[in-house]
Image (tube, rainbow, N blue to C red):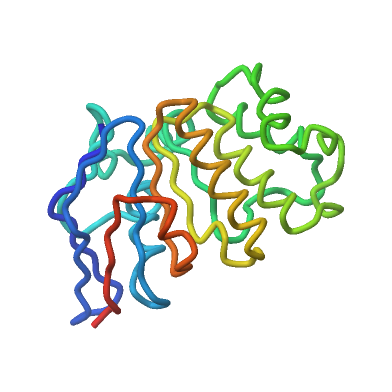
Length: 210
């Protein structure tokens, strides 16, 4: 379902960066581990179409993501890829419900599952709350809900447990895994958090950028 092959990237001249080749089927999970500066977020951004590689291909289903651009890329990402950013990309002036509706609007989804999704993530009682009134853990769940609002085929999570204590970190990982299983979506988590290692068997470890 997801195939990554021959990806090369470069931030600065003389600092090449390769992504290991891999494949994931629907429902499979992958953990990408690495220290700060190892390029984990770069990998996630390339997989999600937020950065274009110098060479190589990222194929999701029958679509080469790296060959899309502009509105076509935005629409494809909105429909097929859910991204949980390290710092929640949710709009503080809006309510929880409005943030999910906004994600639905940009992808053309109907949003019929929004209430059920919030209930599954344990924040249904916060649906009318402004994001800036939420705790850090609640805001992270809203970020997950927004990423899942359009039932994506691929879920990408960037350091989803970095700022959470052990208890909430375990809850967030389980929520991501449960939702990925529910949608039969591929799940990729990139992190330096060693606590996540015990939850996902399939792992890639990357070194620091040279």
